[in-house]
Length: 478
Image 1 (cartoon, rainbow, N blue to C red):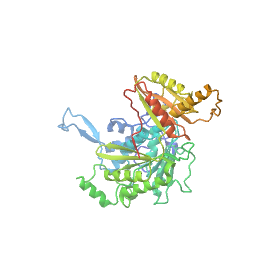
Image 2 (image 1 turned 30 degrees about the vertical axis):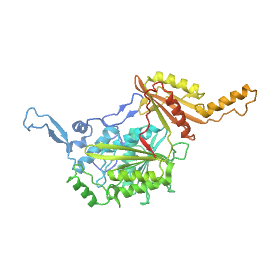
Image 3 (image 1 turned 90 degrees about the vertical axis):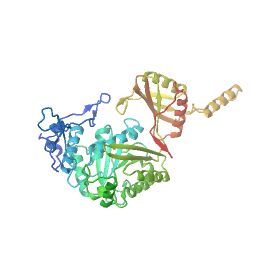
Image 4 (image 1 turned 90 degrees about the horizontal axis):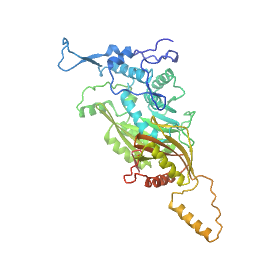
């Protein structure tokens, strides 16, 4: 097998030339799968040892006050972030070494900063993906994937498991390179790149040539989430004006790219308004719609439009990388499907208590295969089914009425029930030796309000109810 390319050429290595990078990812001790991530601190000198193409761009960074002839000089290295070639090779090196990805970032196309893009992926996994039962198929839709196809590639690496992506773009050249990047990393079965020929459509999921080989689950949803890093500016003039308002001359980071990657008529406000309007048409076909937002003023406007579109939940996050601040906005037209209890007991004690509680409520349970949430092993995971709402006041009244009738000698009939009113899964995840989380996930086809009523009943019976708390996604019901 020939050596894998590590220079800045814009030719994608074929699958036959793909070779494992020098630094292998850590192995998650719980899931036994590779854990891809960036380290907290990166030494450019060591990175260049593993990716030789970076060596030509290293610049010495001496300690303050030291001179070139000083015997005590300690030398670290950096690169010129205003140099497009340097930033392109740096990001290729990061993807190659830490994510086992061989990615071409062609001249003239937007060069994605890996750390910034990874922040968005991490937010999605922590706030969106973990809303669903571990092991569920996760399918993301990346709007405007670009030549790098960076979000789908990082997404399948970082999220792992059954994660799949579709990346869309309106630029033929970008789609061509993106497909080569996917193929070079042998991810054709997990990433599909789609050319959106309709520039007026942001979410092309209803187009006749938009077909997938998978579904998210048994319902009509096509995607777990959509994501978007929109063109932020209306024109080069607006971009320059915003720089001057921030008292910034030439940017400290090269951000050149194709016009359709940087600019759109009406700027990000107009583009994201179209996204919100289309989400109101597709509704639950995407479980969570998400986007990056570059201006705080746009954020406030969008939240108002999302509420007007009828979304049931809105979630907001802030991503800070260096001097760059971006916001993530997410909204959903679905009822809540996950509820989580914060219990101040060990995982074993919490399991005993929770099992006793569901048994008292005549809820049947069966053990399921060991699953994982965010790389943390569940100490217990069950599938539960209830044929009666035994936790409600209405059911208790019916039972009292039934007992009274039986005492009067009346024959109670019609009380045989076999069809479940609710089915759900629950798993217990330890946080510390004396605290854990109990996750409850609604099975498709059942009412969220029924699970919510059960959750509230269990919440009132918590052993540490004197200080009751719950851990749920940080969203705003609208």
